[in-house]
Image 1 (cartoon, rainbow, N blue to C red):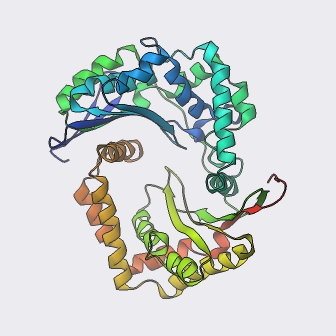
Image 2: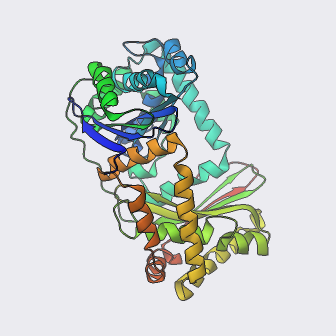
Image 3: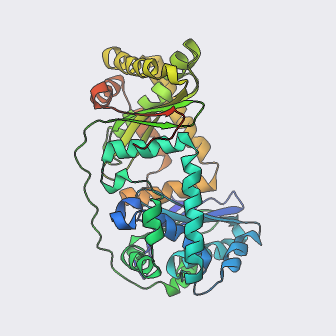
Length: 416
């Protein structure tokens, strides 16, 4: 372990991680709950995200306006987000206000009251958020990709849920979900910045005074077998939005590092193969990139681009042509060295942000139950070789494995 990183298990079973950075005057505090949209039943679709909204409506200790003002009054920031496998509530502040930041995020997850009078109003807010995503095609296309990759499995449903399920939520239902998932042993508190571990432990023990000690026994549903799909939706758009994607490695697979480097080579920047070919050579798009998502037992790799509707079919062929080039000829030493340097630079630049550091150690604990030092991460990246890239390319970049999702301009919206 790093001398600046420490971990403790608190008296109620929650885990507390700190990365002490004495050279800064700020802290980033995150309360991570190991429950996301994949932990919902079909009737609960969107409940994690709705709970994320509702905890800000009041707790046993504070009313809604007190929560809103608590961090802003001292120049800080308070927010939250929901993902497929976790929910995070986080605050950023000057180091002198770490006690306030820590107490606030723990209060949100430990003692929300879900005021009945705010339930219907917040459902309206979430439905408006759904409409916003409906009008954001470069976001919506990813929900369709999830559907193509995972079908009726919870991983295939949008994190935000659907209107019918959200409208059906009750206050008792929220508390039932909270009782099952928002338990201390399913909670990680991650702090990065200028605070010593011993002080953080004392503050966290005090802040957890209202969170009952309960066990967590939820078992996630295993992902289903995958069959590639082609999905098309028409919407009143000026531009077509295209994603080709497939299942890939999970967070525990040793090949994930090589795939991350390959991702940089294919679509990780202006010098990437996809950008140089499809944007610079053909002029087919303004934006094209590849992506690599990792989860506990699955993952996704794919390519996104926006283009004219008349160019979609040829764009798909061009993307798969780049895949085939890598599978047949692999990559050059120069390309590999550049991608490794790019990955290392991205990691190092991220360390300048206390928020990024907090996110890194929080995710590491949820997925690995351990801390990976910067030296360990750098070593794993530096050890990626051309044969490893070739192996990963042959496994992942087979065009027959890919689903294709198109959002194309049309006069009337169509449903998938």
